[in-house]
Length: 312
Image 1 (cartoon, rainbow, N blue to C red):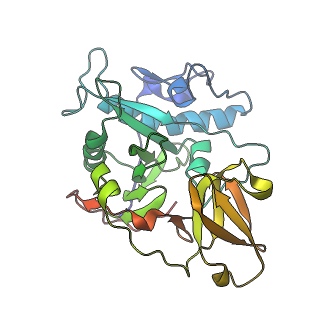
Image 2 (image 1 turned 120 degrees about the vertical axis):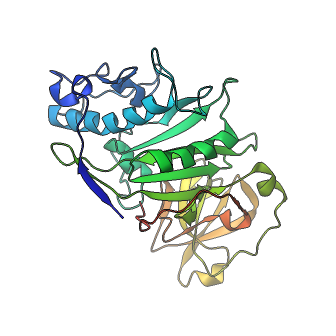
Image 3 (image 1 turned 90 degrees about the vertical axis):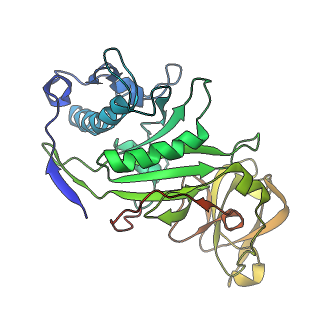
């Protein structure tokens, strides 16, 4: 059930009371706005935003800053129990839309990153590496201890070294002035951007992805492929390509061929009437990500969310 309430922000960190919103605007004791604006070497500027939009962005990141502060240890503070030896870091924060980019507002994490609602986090251990198993525990902890719009436990196998990667996508509700929010509290598990479960977290292990038996692919289905094109006019371009069919006879109209570096022995077919090449996202409600159906997951007890699907 959705929860609607008015937030009472800490006055000393309330962006509303700041004379100017900059990268140095403090949103929590040890967190400034810069935390969500990219790395030191590759920062995102706010100069393209008007004053009102800067304020809205800072208010959205205030919600995220409170979550980060609750997990990470800071001077005079103690991190959340069980996570004292880990750091929650921003992997992907603010996203600036390109001049020719047309982001998917219905299922696009990048779109939600343009307005500060979505942030991608990684949990880092003392060894400086992503704490793979502990990330699952963190997702469960957040589900049980914070208010949120949506939490996505997000696995992928895109690493060039073949290792499985995991992060958490935390989506906060849009703040309606002055501080009214509605938390839908939806949880979801994704693998390679394809939804595996809504309403529960599934723990995906490296052994499952390496040893599970492949399941037959449905050749009647339209897929989305994430890869690097090595054929035709799109050669060298990387991103999502869709809709893609495995059997040319299933396209049902004129089509063109695609091949990808990641799948050297497979030919794919795309209808001429609907062409999406090397885009940043795709609608997981319409297309299955190839070859996600070949990957099995092992369920771990995490409780369930009573909220609706609330797809993004």
